[in-house]
Amino acid sequence: MKQRDVFGETFALESIVAAVVFLVVAALFGYALIMRRAGRRVTPSARAERPRLETYYVGVLAAFAVFLVAWTAWQNNREHRQTAERPVRVDVSAFQWCWNFSYPQAPDSREVDGTCKGDDLPTVVVPTGRPVEFHLTSRDVIHSMWIPHLRYKMDAFPDHMNTFTVTLDEEGRWMGKCAEFCGQLHYKMHFWLKAVSPEEYDRWLQGGGQGAAA
Image 1 (tube, rainbow, N blue to C red):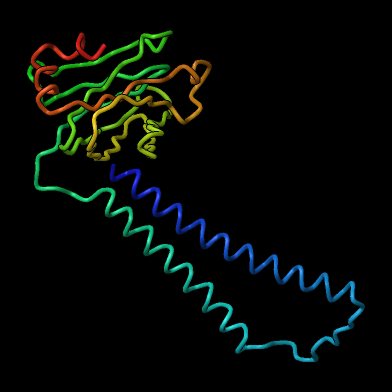
Image 2: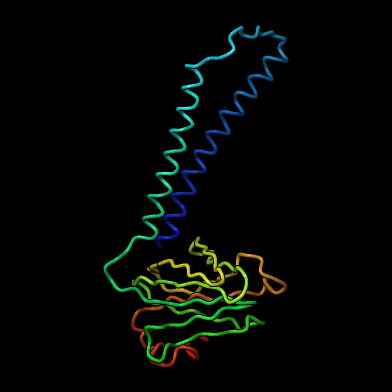
């Protein structure tokens, strides 16, 4: 799945950069400790500034910063790249303490509800191989739609609409959660994401949506 791939590549690169910086700092710190324990005395320089060394230092830091910003922007563009194919739209409404999913493109605007109590979790059904565009908002406080399997999270704000597009290339069912502390029953605010074949998805819509999702 593209979201998992993008997250994996970005996380791996940033981990490598962080590891290199850590090793360099640790090596310099270790060298200073060894020299101190060895009793070597270093005469401080009489120069107040070292413009050339400072220029190199700032240049290296700036290069790393520009590279990471450019890399992140490129990966974000990969993750949210627009396609010519019309996406399946799913409207997501978060509230204390559950979710509502509706399909405005479907006949009679199919909806999926749940109470998030016990096993009564809403299941959002999407087709594989087709882009799915989620329109996410909140009815009350700030929530966050998090699907760990996709390595993806998007905040839901009152009176505001966030959108993101995903394409699932395999069938399956995965747990989704709210990742923003939103009150007393936040820990129960779960849902299911179910990816099915396009044919099964069409049958699900024609069958009424709500019952089939359960």
